[in-house]
Image 1 (tube, rainbow, N blue to C red):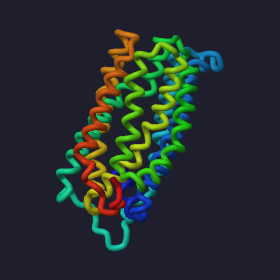
Image 2 (cartoon, rainbow, N blue to C red; image 1 turned 90 degrees about the vertical axis):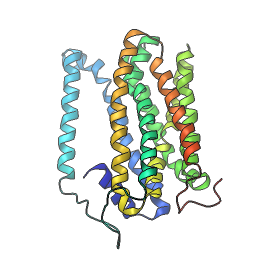
Image 3 (cartoon, rainbow, N blue to C red; image 1 turned 135 degrees about the vertical axis):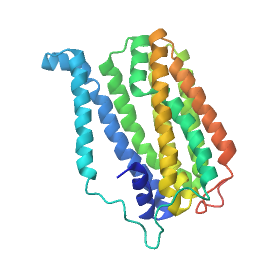
Image 4 (tube, one colour; image 1 turned 120 degrees about the horizontal axis):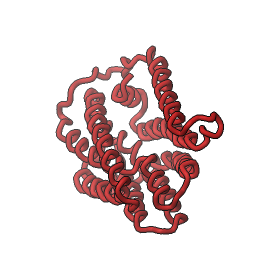
Length: 290
């Protein structure tokens, strides 16, 4: 089942009030597995000692493990049907009345994803190694625990969004996390850098369930599959481009240019999203939201 179909099915099977909570559970489960994968990256340090093979062969084994997980996932989804809908709900249709808002959101989400691609976990580990000579195993452990700690806070996004609105929650949690990224390249104390990374991790993901919930809320139910596809595919493409640029920047300088550039792009995304969509609220959102 594709991601867009899963998203539409999830919306069809829950009440509007529980939509953000549902996507928080969805994000947490996926992120926990991502945190575990980050921890496994440290195997590149231990593999040569434990198995007597080179670091390159150790990385190849990790790639084989990644491919094997993909095969297992294919078997898991093989018998899952995406045809379930809520009673009386129409089948999926192409974008119609919601086309304009979906295209604008897609453009903004792509900028956010492009900026995010500048500081993926592997790039951050490389920067920590270059700037502070921090071993990969230590950096991987740090990112594992920061990823793990920030997952629980995703559930905080649920009551916060009910009180302040989805757009406000997305922007005013995301913006401080991006300011942390902009500051990090100018900090020389590893303890302060780690503290900023922790603060950034605690806040940076609260927009994930709220973002998906917002998209599903502002389009008509039959358009949800199309909206989920249109907003997610360009994001994936955008996030695939910037790591190439980030890798080049890391290769020519130990300064945290990827963090600085990515943070500035994401701050621009936050401010533009707030300006364009603060007045566009879902029909089921609390009218008292300011």
